[in-house]
Length: 221
Image (cartoon, rainbow, N blue to C red; front, side):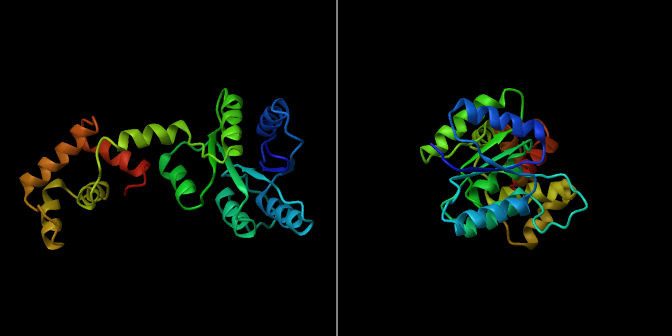
């Protein structure tokens, strides 16, 4: 299990939740920082003292104040912390629930786990910490359910283009012209509408608005 943990969190109520969970798991008292710049400074000092942290737990969003800060959010903190210490395990503990925001944290920043702040999150935190300690990744249920839904249909570039145009407000009748001008086939109106209806049927959506919203949340457009 982890020996040295640093937590970046500016809300005391969630610090207490984390503290209680760690105490129940028998994990030594962690270090705390209320904003990202201080967290990064502590990580840097721990490395220089040859006492590196095993795990960084951070929120994504922090309340603005009048102090001069260089790091705007938890994602920026993770990126720089990983550049200093590539082996540092990272767990994001945040109220953010949109898959389109969460997925890039795994894909681009290579975080080890994500837990959403919610009622009963102590048990989820415990599960996530145990999995990360075993060198596994912990994916939140919001991402797992969204991924399962996305697997109902494999979106092609053609599909994404149609949905993107709808999201931009392009009238359905004008989309075939765009497809034809950009050499995207099939460009016929009936074929395009048939494909669009197939996607909605596969995803169990009844209208284009639901499809556009899903694709936005998933980061497909």
